[in-house]
Length: 164
Length: 196
Image 1 (cartoon, each protein chain N blue to C red):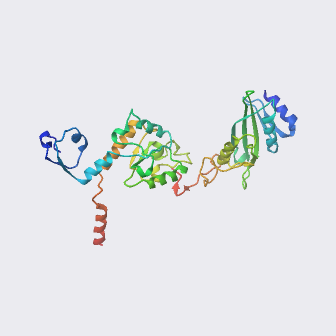
Image 2: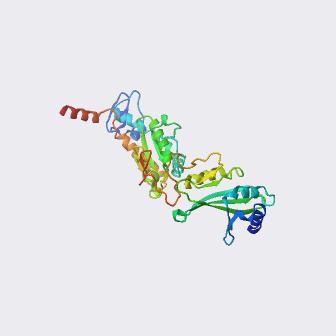
Image 3: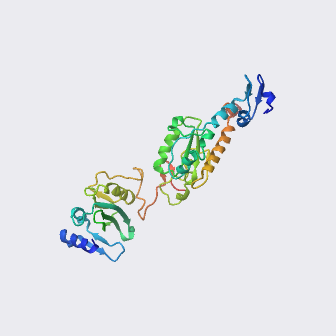
């Protein structure tokens, strides 16, 4: 199924207000949606018999930097029986005092558990409703989120100098 | 070192100092009841360096080269080097790979669990100095010598098995020169104290 058809199903079932932006000209067309509707959109993509996105290939985090003040989470979906792909995107405000947060999709795809933990570990994006949100790669007492544009590494970790 | 065969007949007395005793003794037949007189250091060191048991663990791609060094092709066992599954049974630790800060605490703990005398071979650029992660690797310890003392550094990324064997030959050289019986440092310290 093509991008346009999937997009139409989403706007029919969820409402066109859920769609913020579409980027169909790219090699991999992608749909930016309102994060309030993310969970219901994902559920529809998962259960709709004509879509059947049973596989969440990947979750990506992006930090657009403090100037732009936004962060992005990208979901790459794949349907094994229909062999079609879809890319969903949510944009988050890059808040300073609290971590930006997005809804967790672990209730739909189990594999999102570790993907979301990795995005949390590297970007400091919270996933509301995640069953076990803690760092996955770095030690639990690590300071900061390394893939953020304004990341500064700590000077010492457990008494060991970090700098070369 | 006496190599003359007649001297090695029964009831002979053999005096060895500063030994390189391995080969020349082992390829000669003995008579019955031969006696060898040698230094305690030489014999103990010979025994220790001929049976270096490394701890069986690896942390990155260097471990692949380390494993192939253990296999029959390179055969580390011919030097008496054979991996052990426990730090309590190990004499030497091969740090084969990238030491991350998360791993650093564990490596330190394993090192502390090894019985003395213990040695550390740092294998490859990562564990020598951080390797390719030296500049942007926020998660990498820039050299395992920041957490535990290192005896031999083996260069390479990763080092070939021959290089690791070379590292062990260097370690054997180091052990051969060691002395476990003469407390020279303490004697010097005592002398200093009495002088003051």
